[in-house]
Image 1: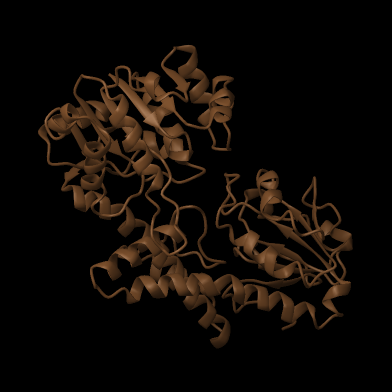
Image 2: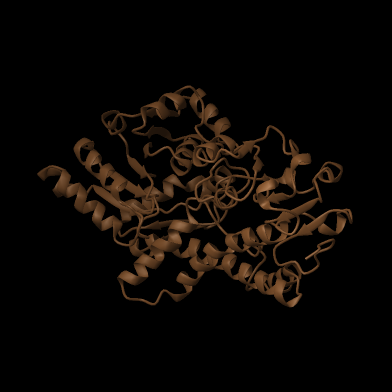
Length: 451
């Protein structure tokens, strides 16, 4: 089976590479010619564990190729996968400009053979119907007669976590396909056969249900994060400990332990925009959006509370303008170089005007962070997580990279009045020396804390 994947971002490149390794013939298309040339050289334009290896393996078997030409990409595919971005349009709605552009170009280049078009991009309810309208609008009269007959559009939302995307694709907990076509069902069974033969995780449903499922899933997970953070803020007021609370509620199998880690809130390219997009859809259909709205508002305030803690505590020592601090973690989560909607970036933008210098370190994401923070002259990028620690008043942890979990206490003690602000609660504060001050999120047992 020949598959064309449109878009070579996190979703598209993982989708293409994994299908190639399942034995399909893959053509990955991207309109960014520089990116395509980069991929042709066997290089991956972003960090995703295991991805470069499987692309190399597929390339050696001639199972994957890259192009920026729609004419080439549309020569003889049986299936299209649409994996282009739907970013926030600035008003809380997903922008559909890239989806429409793809529809226009596919309509002008479609092969004569029957094709199924699977939309993996996260899109609002009604997009499948809208995509058919665009095909009709931009295509020929003969194409108009084919839509719904031998050209089928289906919803196939992705559930890939950055940093674990390859594993998520190859070991899915569910595969959602929204369709009203028996042809699409049969194609989907062939596509996902090797991923579905152990567990019956291929789920067919209506197109609207599939489109809404992705938004509902991400928004529910985001709600768990906001809820536990709100409880963490209460813990600090009443003398409770969020680690105990998580254990107490997470061991209830109706709730579960996942996504109950208190911290700085959620970020990245999915949760923030998907929560806002779901709110927009609820508002459009005049359905109350109070829970979704609260989820967003709690998340927006969470990192600001952390910033206030840092400023309040350190201002007790000396004027902040005379102090420098150290910050670990710039990516929105570990095992990725993605800084989109990174809480660490937001925190840095808030703190930079107050301090003399801020020394920062991330094992992967520093180059991307520099682009986001290029107007701040007092941010210094370190080659090592301990560089310039002796010039700092405090250490701020924003991303839970494994190498940050057990810091070298001898080096921490080189700080002036050693103090750690742990925005991810990753450090076992009970193991810290009594000379190191520790401030976490929602932890009442603030050993060595002076506030």
